[in-house]
Image (cartoon, rainbow, N blue to C red; front, side, top):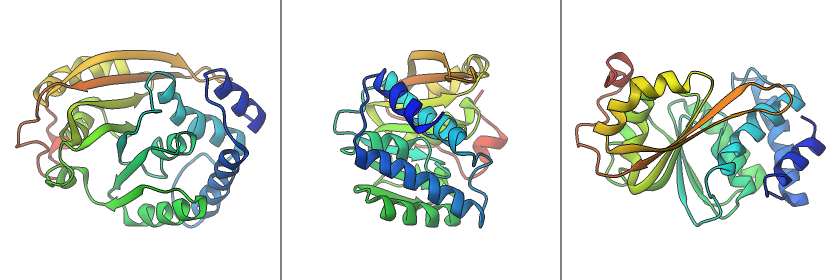
Length: 238
């Protein structure tokens, strides 16, 4: 996906980008490739692929959820900043908190947000399991996002405790979403959530399947969740 197609595809979804925003995506790509030589951020470094599989794919959440409101988003395990930072560039009014367990990645994100001039972005080095038990973060976010972090039964335990009651957890998934949802339904319910909507679509040009699960937080998450680091992955709620 070249820049022109990127602009057209987003415009078709009602998202128009200013020259400044396009410049930010361009800088994002350059810094991603530059830093990727020093540390493992992504296996995708070809420009058209980055624009399609990282930028466009991240922003696709906005085709099904309204990010134009003044929301505070938490992105769990964002890695190189996906999906929250491409969304933040497109919707600059958003407040974003990123939590990632690897300090080197946080270092990259600190440099990136500074170079891109992004405001209201908080970057935290922590495990999602310990982060979700901290009073100042627990049940305090309007939206929590995660993209390709873990299977849904595990991911729900990492994300749902951070969502405020009445808020939304957006899980961005590939082709296995239906199967993961079947296994993860119990976990979502125990953690206070309920599947509100799910959307299936294909990425343009390469037709790979993507799924977006929009889960509403209906009641508070029991205090025991998330459990200690590593436990959700070893013994998921199923």
